[in-house]
Length: 401
Ligand code: HEM
Image 1: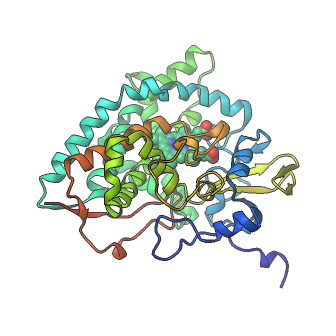
Image 2: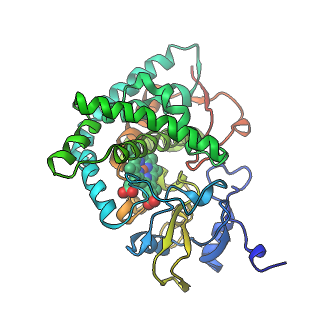
Image 3: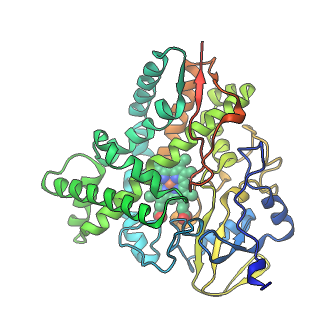
């Protein structure tokens, strides 16, 4: 047997019966081999970084390239040598990344996002009205958790929600690690074609929305975004904006159905509670990929230029050094915002304020209006998204009354 074939696989299997816990290997690795070699589903070997401090150091290091940060390591069909598309904010480095990030970040400030809170509240209420009009049971994913973030991101970007058939199914394919290369490329092409038509229309007829402002911001700065950049950036925002938050809403609901005594803590201090849910669930389940462009030390390990690293966010968020009793959901932690569920450093999530507002409003609205919400099926029968980049529950049958 060659040394290479002995490299252990990237841990991806959660302990049975513990759908909210990361793979069990992480606790041992943090203790015994905090940065160790693993074989990724994409076929390459990488350093798996499991401790909180090391994960933050890797993500803050400007010599780490993000060129594979579309979670390429988790996809058996990924081509790691593929060139980064212009506009792929999550994969660009240095000046190219800052240029795009500056254009987008103005749209996601706390002030801007707070201005959307009323709209989010209205959506929560109207979806609860519709759900409660049903005869005592519903699928919380389809009726609540998915449509709310989809509507919010569509409204913000200026994408007609009525067109969702043209991007929702494709977005799901794009974040699935099961999709073949052809299926992934076809989904990508379909959404790209749709967005190219939309941007062409907005160039002709600008509206009061993020996509129109992206076009005009570049033009007034004398640095217009090309159509390719607009499409790839638009696609990143559209996919990142609804998959993650929808999964967090449904999974958080399930956690709170299992911990009924903790629901009051959420209603009393939603800001604090949401941070703990983000830490505890860490839905970006395979971590984020980086590529070392220089030799660098990570903890006790010497990493060489040209090697890949996986920063395991879900492991860092269970590191006992930072979060005593890390495997417990505890809404009274000190400094609840120290988690890395939104990443860290130059690529830290742009949409985090928006996600926070959506989560706060969705969960408080739901448990205030439906205090007797319960699971409508045995917990063991639920199916989870083990093969998608963002973890979640596929359906969440609930009942009330
Ligand atoms: C609970 C919900 C969310 C979670 C857990 C989450 C998680 C993350 C993480 C971990 C990263 C860092 C990736 C890396 O370093 O390689 C990231 C980046 C990003 N997220 Fe989110 N996200 C969420 C919601 C959103 C929303 C609502 C948007 C809205 C558009 C969004 C847009 C983005 C974008 C554009 C980036 C790339 C930023 C950059 O590369 O500079 N995310 N997100």
